[in-house]
Length: 409
Image: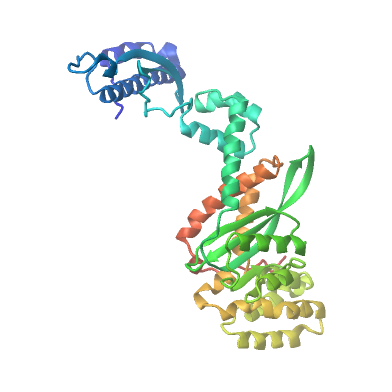
């Protein structure tokens, strides 16, 4: 382990100069000392590694070997290597006359610590251009990264994201949450709105995963059909899908039923409730909302239908359009009742995918414009993977509160 040596007399002498140095000056001196000791540490480690390779200490003679069989030292060569926060270190790499020694302390042909390139990729992901990253990298990371290196790092990130987006689906997913969200993207030098379709799958253990991120028109039946076909090519078992949870996107429900004939459809209760409430006068909204909760939150479908009959008798004369709106979606909003009771809260609405979309928007708000489709996928993939860490600890049976809407809206 690297240990920093502290020379107390030197520190006492330095302390006398603190008024002239100032806090920033002290920090700069400390970094220079750490940088020097980090260089010595790497050099010393490679010397020890080289001695193990030779099988003898630096000045130890070897007898009994033909000269041609001996591996002899051949000095050192200089190499620069950037360490996060310290900048570039000038290190000395030992070498032998036969060129057989290859250090494992530093990766071959690498000029930067891996975490630097990871940080560059993340900064690029957050919307920094290659030019601006090249300019600010020295101050943020301790070493200047060329624009070509930034492009190389971002290229590897794009490749990794594409592999993740097209990964084989080995798990069985019983529930699918479906939705789409819009982003402003710069495409062909123009700023346009592009929708990204999102599918969250719930496996047999109740754990959610983002299994699809694909640009496309969320109101196009053909786009959704192609997305479902792609999921099946990647391994999604259509017989394993039991339920699709969605809002009222045109054409989606019909296509879903055709592609997953054994599955049922759950319409998001919050979306349906909002549609109903948009047809209700303000002075009646609180009463209508309370009665609609009774319809949605009964513990059996039979009770829900009884409450709806009462709802219909009570309001059909005054607000027939609201009653008709609820009646047309009633069966699909009560579909969750045929599934395990401990999962009901999670199956009533598209709340999980709405939360994910909200996080997408929060993270992209400061960017205003996403630099193209690939950059958008990169950002959404990172957010999705972070959400999956949370979801793994909180399966769908974990949710205990009932999502609803504000009756005053």
